[in-house]
Image (cartoon, rainbow, N blue to C red):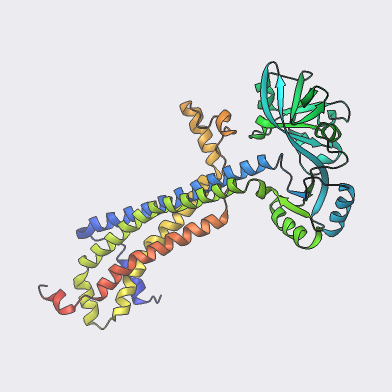
Length: 416
């Protein structure tokens, strides 16, 4: 079978003779190093993707995909706005009004800050699946006039309250009375506890929207209109569309990424920096590849001289050593990708097995909110890692190949 001469010789040089076993060992170390570097990089990025997904899922348990606000902080006639938005955008699956406020909760001599959310249980499930995470009681217990309250798990623990206990809610506004300014407060009954295994468990409190309107003196207005969408990850595009073409003046839409923008930017920056830091592992293997190719060129000077005297061009000489280096890089990269995929798909099970065998717990749920190592394989990460490894492998071949093309036959064969 016909094979180009540079390809034949380049692949032939991968097999060592007895007198240059050391060079072959260096090449093998380069090959293994590239494979391990690629596998580690893919695995670590998959684990970071897993943490990113877990955090997003927990945020979206409490934060609606899109919110619409009116200038001035109060939104009137939300029903008409809701109907209008549903007609203009097929992406919107449901709407729910909300009244947002802040307050101090007091019970058993303990005080705690809380973000108050006045919701209508009838509409809320169309936007946020909070009812699925009410572990005690029911979301439907938030009935108008009952002044019931549902607390986050850790917020309830810090106040030392449970179902049926009383909690005093104090808002940062005052009522003017003959006795002077007195803070506005109201006693609520704990009717439920929710848990989403995220920071919202520590400071979120849910009450009925009409009770919230009375407490915060909102009248017939609400703070915002929450929107559910078909695909939560398309929420930014829905927001842009509403702001540009649908919403009247003095209205603005915000999506869930806006409310956590700095946090997600930090996550993305961390992932990017981790990519370049772990890329150094591959770079170390690439330097081994470069050094092994340099030694091969030195060892093969007489062979190169003979090939040149037989009429082989400098370009063909360069191709021999580029092919040799790329062969090591391609095989190492492919093996690393396969190993990385296997580790990424089984990372959770592997870590759980290690924890059982050695009786250790890598993640404390009280600190990290989860007690397992999540992993999510993203094919674009595999593509980027593979391309980066191949590019570095190619660059490592350039200097040795150029050095080989500069060998002068007369000088190389003088003492042969």
